[in-house]
Amino acid sequence: MDVKTSNIETAFHHSTWCDIDLKALAHNYEQLQLLAKKNMSHALGIMPVIKAEAYGHGMLRVADCLSGHGCKYWGVSNVAEGISLRREGFKQKILLFESTLSSEARGIVDHRLTPTVCALEMAHALNHAAHQAGVQFPVHIKIDTGMGRLGVNEEQALDFVETIRKECPHLILEGIYTHFPVADTDREFTLAQMRRFRDLVYLLENQFITFTYVHAGNSMGLGDYKSDLFNLARPGIMLYGVYPLEDLKERIHLKPVMSVKSRIIFVQTIAKGRGISYGHTFKAKEDITVAVLPIGYSNGYMRSLSNKAFVLIAGVRCPVVGRVTMDQIIVDVTTATLSGHIPKIGDEAVIMGVQKGESISVDEIAHWAGTISYEILCSLGNRLPRVYHS
Image: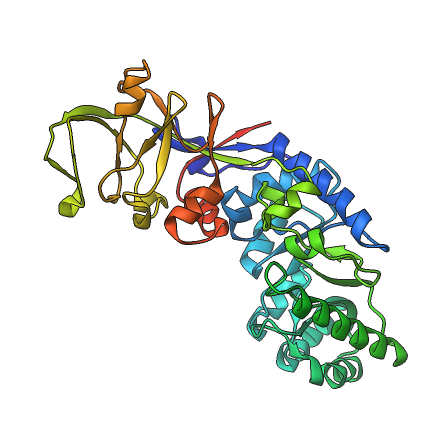
C-alpha cells in the first residue's frame, strides 16, 4: 500500500532525526506472534497497538509494514486515528480503546471501526446509528477488574451485558476484555484479575452470551502470563523492541525499532571555571571541549536530562553538561577528543541507539529522565523527523 508521508517525514535535510527500522519492526511482530501461540492455547493472533502515532514511530508507516506481514487487527486510541487508517485504505479490524462520545457513533459505524463500550448511553447511540445504516455492528465490552480507568465495574458486568443484548438488537457482542495495571509489579493481583475475569466470561456463557474475542494481555501480560481463556493479545511497547521487564529477554528476542541521531553544529573550548547553559548548573573543573547538538525539549528531549544524560560521539559516551535548552544541548566531548577523534561540525552523534559497538537505550534515557520508555519514544518520535529504512 502506498502510504502518504507527512512533511515531517520528507524534509530535505535533517540535523536531528529518528531512524525507524522497519525490518526490526517486522521481526518483532513475528516474534510476538510466536509468543502468543505459546502462551495462549486458543490464540487467534495479536492486535498490535499503534495508537499515539505508533508510540512515536509513525502510525501509517507502521500499519503499512505490518499489513505487508499479514496483520489482521490493530488497536488505536480514538476515532480520529481509526479514520486516518481507513482513509489510507486499510481494511483490517480496528479496535478503539477509548470509550467515545455518543456524538461519534455515526462516524464509528460509517468507517467500520470497532468501539469499546462501557456505558449504556454509547451503546444506545451505536445501536441507533447501526439501525440507520441497516447493519449489525460489532462492539467490544471493557470490564474494569482493577485498572480504575475505563470499563464496566466487574460486579455490574452481567447486568450491563444482558441489558445491551436486550435493548440493542443491532449490536453484535463480538469481544470482551480487561486491562492489567500491575502485570510487571504484582503477579498475585494480576492472576486474581485473570481468575475473576474468567469467572465472568463463564458466567456470561451460562447465559448463552459468547464472544469471538476475549483479550487482556498487554506486552507484559502476553510475555509473562499463560492463559487458556484469552485468544487475542494487545502488545504495544514490545512491538517496538522495548522490554517491559528485563526477565523477558530470556523468552523473546526483540530489536529496537527507533534510534535518534543528530549532527554537531558547533565546537568550542570552555576554560576552567566557566559556567555552561542557563543557570550555570555546570561549571568546568578544567579546560574542556564541548559540542552543541540541535535537540532540546521542544524536540522531546526532556529538560530533566540536564547534567544526567550521555550521547555517543565516535562511539564514546559523552555527558550532557548544563541545562537542556529549548532547541539545543551541550555535550562534553573531551573524552572523545582524548581517544583520538577530534569532533567537528557535521559529525554524527547518537542520542539513542548504537554507534561503533557502544549503545544508549531508551530505558537508560528514561532512567536518567525519571520517567518510562513509553514517554521517551512518544516525545522524541512525535516531534522529530522520521527516516524509514526497510
